[in-house]
Image (cartoon, rainbow, N blue to C red; front, top):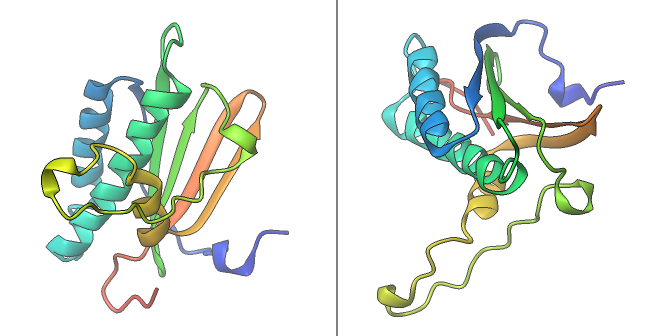
Length: 156
């Protein structure tokens, strides 16, 4: 039985499309996401946060799950419900290590910005900004889902 927080009967599909599992495909998917969210009354800060989380998740898929896959593809699906935007990312790449998303601990930020690492913030940002994060591997496919609280009046 699904977790009560994940049940939202009034979800409205916004988009569902396949993209090339490349950096260019990620950019194309983010553009499609922006267009899909255009009709919602999300503030610019909320929309930026949503795009940041989805970009981090998709970049991880391309860089880790799909690296070296013959013709890499991923699917991005978005729907809107009373509790926010629901995101589904599916790919046929390698499974997540240990069968679950990384914890994403807060990175240590050095005093000098020149020493700031280029990576290592992705899963921390995803876990901080996304709600109801789930991952499953089924039939050779990875499926990552989460909710983004970007509707007016939403309480995370």
